[in-house]
Amino acid sequence: MIPINLPKIGEEEVEAVVKVMRSGPLTNALGAGPMVTQFEKNFAKFAGVKHAIAVNTGTAALHSAIVAAGVKQGDEVILPSFTFVATAEAVVMAGGKPVFTDIDPETYNISPAVIKKNITKKTKAIIPVDLYGLSAEIKPISEIATKHGLAVVEDAAQAHGATYNGKPAGVFADAACWSLYASKNMTTGEGGIITTDGDEMAETLRLIRTHGEKAKYASLMLGYNYRMSEIQAAIGLVQLDKLPAFVAKRRENAKRLTRLLAKTDKLQLPEETNDRQHSWYLYTVRLKNATENERNKIVEELRQKGIGAEVYYVNPVHLMPYYRENFGGRKLPETEKAAKQVFSLPIHPSVTEAQVDYIGKTLLSLL
Ligand SMILES: Cc1ncc(COP(=O)(O)O)c(C=O)c1O
Image 1 (cartoon, protein in one colour):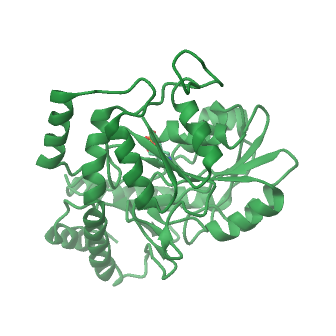
Image 2 (tube, protein in one colour):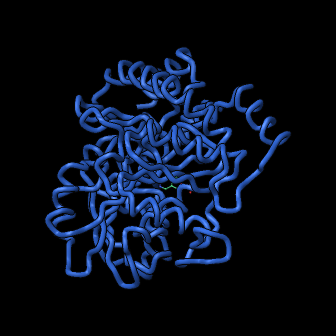
């Protein structure tokens, strides 16, 4: 089976881990050991911002950023439902109410026009998600946020290597949250990192990461143990150096697959524009005008032929039992339609040209 994603770990990562394990320290009580500090410095440079704060998951990154953005009990936060559940989880963990908002059917990203309609007196923040690795429409979203005094926390969990107007994804938000989970464009096994230009925001995030402490045993605010270990940071430093090559190979595979699949008009293919470069975390197609069963049949047939096609996301968050019961009620027609018609194909850096050709030809033969 060609898996949908696969971490690419080399001898360099192994050596970096062994070095930390032999000489230590393994972690730092305030979350800022030498490897973590160096990783943050390098990641901030890559992301084109002043600060990066490393944490232990992308979910922790989102939760920390939502709290640091000032979201409190009862505040409303606008976000897509067509995302991984962690985006909504972070809001609920902070005591906020997720306001699920429909998407643009072409990009699958949250629609600025629908955001405008969903703003109320209780709205505190917006979380655009760079879904599949294509940057959300961050400029119009930032303009709406500025007009209404809202924070923008970008969920860039899938966007390592994506750009918007020539700048790295995340630059135009108050804070951007990245996942370093094993499937992502770069990984630390589990891990996350928040990038921001805000000095005060960065300071608060560092407190939240480690029990609200600037010095041991003197908590200044409610915090958590969201610290990244030195071992994870050592892996991250190597992976970050390799990221440009990983993304270049993903792009090459995506272009090759698009050349093949452009032969049919039954699929809506993913696209990048001059102002938005994809990170190519997921190559997602839509089976136009299809029912859910028709889509599922093709996914199943691809899997039988050794192609690890997957559906992201078969259940939009507002339809999951917990979220439907507590925060449901809103109809999201474009989200519900996309959830029935999309599926993703493997293009990660270990997928060879021959495998891309096989994926393309196999899919064409099934349509
Ligand atoms: C869009 C999105 N948001 C948040 C997360 C959560 O990240 P993590 O799994 O590192 O907690 C992920 C990845 O899993 C994601 O894809």
